[in-house]
Length: 257
Image (cartoon, rainbow, N blue to C red; front, side, top):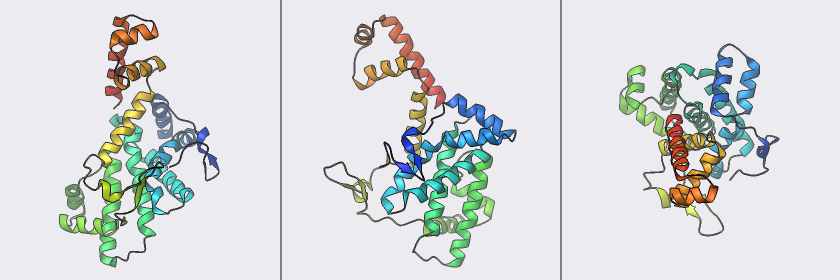
C-alpha cells in the first residue's frame, strides 16, 4: 500500500497538495480558457487521486512508477475533457478515466494473445466509450456502445472481456501481519464494486470540505456513538448548537456527493 513518505517518480507523496472542491472548480474554469498554469496546478493538486487509484493495481507485480505515470496521463485526459457545466464533482469523472488508462496499459502489456479481429473490436469499443464518457460525463452502457458502433451487444461484451487482464484467484488482496485475504475470499462480495468505490471517494471528498468542528461532531456522533447531549458537554456548546452543526454537516455532504 502506498502511504507515508514514499517516493513515486521522484515525488514525495507525503507532501502532495490536496485541492478543495471550490479550488478545483475555479481551476477547471480557468483551464477552459486555455490557462496552462491552472492546468499544471490542477494536475499537481490531484496527484493523490492518482495514488488512490493505483493502489488497487499494486498487487499485479507492476512497477509503481510506471502505473503512476500512466495514471497521470488519465488524469490529464480527464482535465482536458471535463465539462464544468454539468455540475459533477471532478473526482467522479476523473477516477474512471484514470482507471481506464491504467487498464489499457496493462492490457497492451499482457502476455495473453487475443485475435486481431477481437482486439480491433475491443479498441473501437474503448475509443467510443471514452468519447461518450467525455460527452455525457458518465460511464456509457454496453447497449449505448453497441448502438454507437453498430455492432451486436454480444460482440462488444466478448471483445471487452477478451482483453481484460486475468487475475489469479489466489492473488493476495490484503495482509496486515495476520491472515492474508485473497481474491477467492471476496469473489462473492457484491459491495466491492467500482460504483461503491467511487461513492467512498466522493464521500471522503465531501467530508474533507467540512470544518474541523463539523468533522469532530460527526466523528463523536456516528463513530463513537455519543448522544448530542454528550457531544455538547464534551466540546462545550449547547445541545441545540450540536444539532444545528450536525444537520448542516450532513446537508453539506449530501450536496457535495
